[in-house]
Image (cartoon, rainbow, N blue to C red; front, side):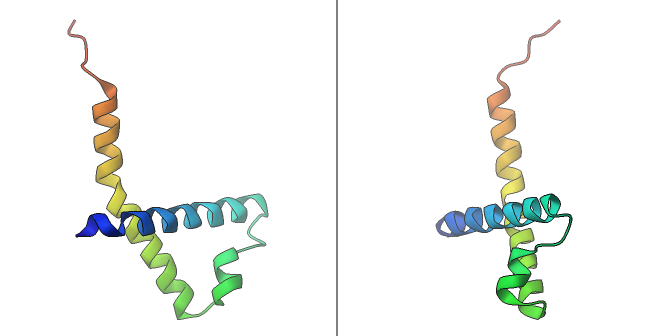
Length: 75
């Protein structure tokens, strides 16, 4: 069932990453999420959801890294 939400979760992770990138480039002057949604509770909820999306993908990324590593030579 969660697989159906993976595209949305990936999109939200990308939005979060771009927002962090813009924050870094502008020295914290521009926060796109806060500018669009304000600085209230809704923005906090959006950040929490983006964080949960990131946590959701951690095992998948670790698995992909492990599978992509291939067999290790024995010495």
